[in-house]
Length: 155
Image (cartoon, rainbow, N blue to C red):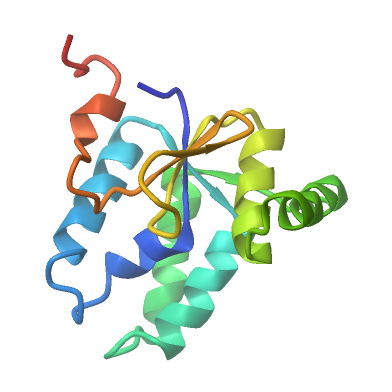
């Protein structure tokens, strides 16, 4: 169980991607559970990436009004973290040290510097841990949402 879970852009996009019928329902379940349990954390980077990709890359894309409304909902249901200069510097170190893509490194740096130990993302192998930050793929075969919810953890 985690007290807060950072969510990468790909999870948000799959929630609205009708071209991914196997991932869309899972993304909706994950986002709903995180919101209901007050665990979800997003960065301003993730919200910006969501808007751009949801209105340009999804087939069919969301309208700007639809994407705007979704962002408003995320602002109400998730903790939102800003990207700061020290986070950018730490992300650059992540690129240098771990050869991460910059945007992935910025997610990692945001989690690390805000003491968030779990990131839900499809961009890493299952259960990669980098300097104490665990990357969990919610679309992986071993993923169980109940493991991450307070009061529902199976012993």
